[in-house]
Image 1 (spheres, rainbow, N blue to C red):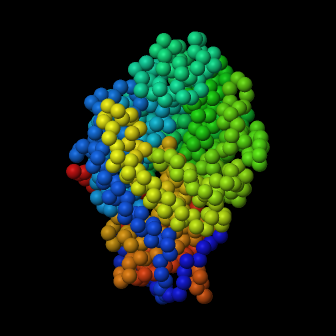
Image 2: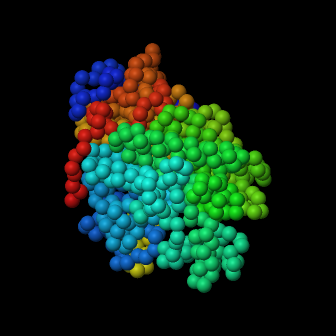
Image 3: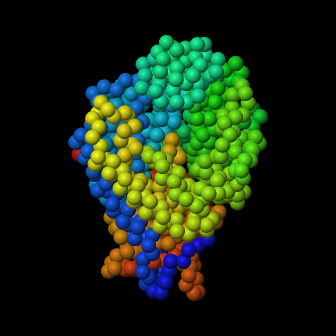
Length: 636
């Protein structure tokens, strides 16, 4: 359902890009198509602009309280074990995205300084070696490096970050040694724990020392560990020795689905350079997992041995691997990782068949579904007992598959699986970017919650205020703070901005790239993001395109904005139709972006017709041309 915000009076100029790439720093040659009318701004536009402006002082209050001038966290002198660097990066993970969407220019330099500070700090603690985590799993790598990927969106010309992107991706190419993370012949990442020091196939008690209290709240990884009967035994040193022995013997050698999140690291390097070797890696690795699903009768195995055989170190069982079907989260990690991998393969290839990988996970658990009190319950775990742990599936997982496919069947499946009540209410209950408002956003797209843009932007502002209040009343000292302390206080909350401005669900938190309908650039200031005094709302999403309302809130100045198809320029815009006027104005674009100039106080509603995944994804800005320039930058 499309809401009508346009009333009498609007003046807009639509500038169409020629099929040729824009020259460096030059957009003056663009063809102009004028429109004339005016309209008062809708409430959502005022709220969106207010939130975009308010997030900066909120971020500064957070940073000033919890960081040193060099960007490191005000915290302890020592931190043992392998866990923790991800939480340092997570504390500011969406700062570069905020800038990329139009936040103040100061946010770009601040974001990079904070990344440098956390890297130095956790290098001193011992978790980071040569600027990359020494050896951890891709759920935690994914949490950490989402921050890093956003720098390519904010400003891809930064030589230091570009060089790091290539260095980090190189860690997952086969170097021909026993210390290689990747086996290029078998297409396996050689351990669930991996990083700059190679695969971590043997764990020590010290590796797990800070993570044990958290894992004691989960089911045991195996039910047959000698002398171990409860998850609480993680905290018993004597019994933990038996748990550690089981982990090393059964879990730490070979590949797991969780490693599919590494495709984002490869695609990150590809979008800086366009080098085909990164694309090839992504496609071959995702295909390898699709082949394993087929070999295992349609169910993704959660462990593959060093010889490439399913269940090699698990007595032939396809379940029981690290972050697998049994432990600790069950189906969640399979859906997240397969959706990340498949979405990245689709993005870089334009071939939707890769979505069969996450679809196979949903199909496997759907065959075992039950219904209770009108709700569809699906099994979330599997072990020697068979399928168990029945509960509703969170809407965010099938939503991401529908968002990539745009198929009606996938939309209907989302509605079938989610709790109908979730579509009608907001649910701000989590920190660190895992807000659960996907279902309500779907209710908006379905036409059931027309007030959602206003509701989510108000709720986001209120949540920002709540976190600021917690910051102001926080009297804890570093010795009292755990490694998650800051990420739950981060007041830069972007879910509502992403959904309204970009027409997309929030990215998958554990390492997913941000796939969107559109993206914006400010041509006058030659930077990423929606220009100041502008607001945007994606109101409808179909397989053929989107409807988009643009608002210029400035009463006396015209505003220019470049609108790109997809976050990475992957969608080809065929034409733009101005609607709610008579006769409709149709303008051919035939490019991945176009430029609009809105007159003072203007509101315009457009239908943007797209051919999706037709262009090579890239971090390039419209004025970069075929090659992204490389610039030495400082962050002080």
